[in-house]
Image (cartoon, rainbow, N blue to C red; front, side, top):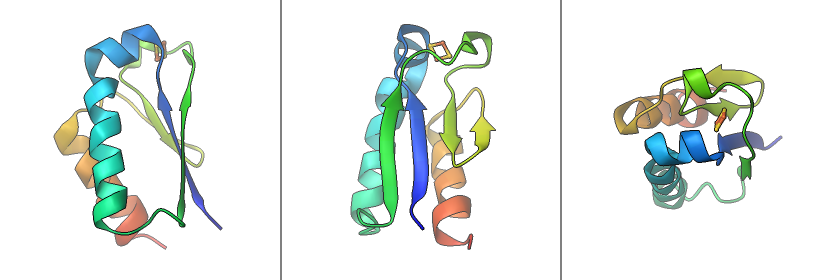
Length: 82
Ligand code: FES
């Protein structure tokens, strides 16, 4: 089953880092040739701006993400995970 990554593209998360985080995720997927294994989509504001920038992988929510976090999260959830 594909992993579903949802990145918040609401204005708060977007302006506080998810614009760059989206690029990091896209590069990671391309580098690891995971295009067929990952369903990446954007969402509108999730109502959790105080915790932003936020990202979800399947049902797990990640808060206050930055580039370093994102790479670690992707590595753990897409590569070394199940
Ligand atoms: S903009 Fe992302 S939770 Fe509001």
